[in-house]
Image 1 (cartoon, chains in turn brown, purple):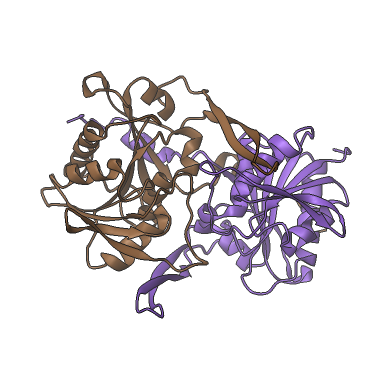
Image 2 (cartoon, chains in turn purple, brown):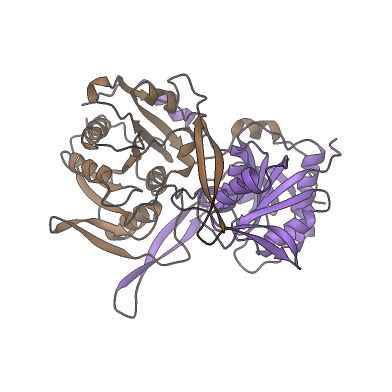
Amino acid sequence: MNTRKPNILVSNDDGIEAPGLQRLVEELKSFANVYVSAPYTQQSAVGHSITIFYPLRTYEHLKDGKFFGIAVEGTPADAVKIGVLHFFKDVKFDMVVSGINHGANTAINIIYSGTVSAATEGTILKIPSIAVSLTTFTKADFIEPAKIASAIIKQMWEDDKINLHEGTLLNMNIPNVPLNEIKGVKVTKQGRSYWEDAFEVRKDPNGRDYYWLTGHMEYRDISTEFDVAAVKENYVSITPLHFDLTDYLTYEEIKNWQLNLK
Amino acid sequence: MNTRKPNILVSNDDGIEAPGLQRLVEELKSFANVYVSAPYTQQSAVGHSITIFYPLRTYEHLKDGKFFGIAVEGTPADAVKIGVLHFFKDVKFDMVVSGINHGANTAINIIYSGTVSAATEGTILKIPSIAVSLTTFTKADFIEPAKIASAIIKQMWEDDKINLHEGTLLNMNIPNVPLNEIKGVKVTKQGRSYWEDAFEVRKDPNGRDYYWLTGHMEYRDISTEFDVAAVKENYVSITPLHFDLTDYLTYEEIKNWQLNLK
C-alpha cells in the first residue's frame, strides 16, 4: 500500500474556472499535493492539438486572493506540457488528472476530446494519467461526482494500480445520477456508437449562408463491457486507452501487399 | 479488378491552396472523379477537432477562373464532414484522400495530425480513407510524391484493396527522395518514437514572458516494421490505423479491479 502523498497535476478542457475542475481540485487535496495548469478558456472539441505556430501566454490564476494555478492561452495538451516541463518542473508528478469534464467522453467522442487529450499528454510525458468526465450535457452539480472520482483515484493510488503500461491512460466516465443509484465501477472497452451528423444551413443578416453542425448518437453498444452502455446502466466506467493507433488485425491481413511505385 | 472511375474527396490540413493538395488533385484526376473540400488556411497540429461552438463559413474556391473546390473556415475534420454531408451529398464517395501533407505523420505525430484526422473523419463517415504525407519539413517539390501517391492509390482501387474493415484507415508516408532512391512500399506499424519537448522563454517588448514549444524526436524504432524507420530507410510506409483506442492488453489485466465509490 502506497502511504506517501502523491503529486497530482490537474488540467481540463473547460477552462481553469470550470466548476468541474474546481470541485475536483478541492477533493483531491484531501489526500494529494495538487497543482493546476489548465486552459484559460473553454477548449472543448479541440482534439489532441498543440500550439506550434504561435507562442503561448500564461497567467497566474488566483482564487480567494491566493495562487490557484497556471492559466494557459492554449489547448489542454499545451497546458499539461507547459505545467510539467516548465512551471512545476521541480515537482515529480505521480499523476495527471484531467477533468471533470462537463459531458461524456465515451465511444467515438474520445477522439474529439480535449479532456482525454490532456491525459494523453500526461502519458506521453510518462506520467500515469486519468481523464474524468460527467456524462451529461445539461446543467450539472459537480460536488458528488468530484467525491466519487477522488475516492476512486485515491484507491488506485493507495493500491498501486496507477502504474500501468507505458503509454496507457485511464478514461473515467461518471453517470449523472445520485450516488445511491450508481451500481459500481466497471472496467470497459471503448464503445462503437457514433454520431449521425448533419449540417443546418442558416442565412446571416446579409443573406449569406452559414452552417451549424448537428447530429444524434447512434447507439450500437448494448453490453456493459462497453463504456457507453456501462454509464447508461449507471456504472462508473473506466477504460484503458493507448495512443498506438495501429490496427493490428488489418496489419496482419495486408502486410504482404505488393504495391508498385508507378 | 475494379474498372469503374472512383469518386474521391480530397482534403488536407495545409489549406486548399497548398501545393501538396494541388499536385495530388491533378494526379488523381488521371483515373478518378475528384472533389475538393479543404480548410481555407493552414490547420496543422489541430488534431482531430471539430467546430461546435461557432458556425462554419465556406467559400467556393476558384482556380484559373473555374470551380476548384470548397474552402472551409474550419478544421480538416469539419471540411470532410461538410463536403460529404452537404456540398457533395449526391456523390457516392469511394474514397477520402487527405494530403499531401508537408511533413511526416509517423509515430506519436499521428495523434496531433490534422491530415490523419481528415482521413479519420472519412472513415467515421464509412468511406475508405487514406492520409498522405511527405516526410520533410523543409522546402519540398510535390510533383513526384503526388505521382507516387496517385499510382499507389490507383493500384489499391483497381485491386479492390480499398475496402478494409469498418473503422480502418491507411496512413501513407512518402520519403522525400527521388523516385529511383525509393526502395518500395512497406506496410508498417505506428512507431514508438516520441518528442522530447521543452519550452523556450522569451520576453515581449513590454517585458512580459511568452513561451515557444521546442523539441527533438527521440528515435526508438529501428526495425522497418515501424513507420518512422521504414521512411528513414527510403520505403513508402503504409500503416493501417483505427480509432478504437482501447488498450486490450491492459483491459485483460485490469478488468477485475475491485474499486469502491467512496
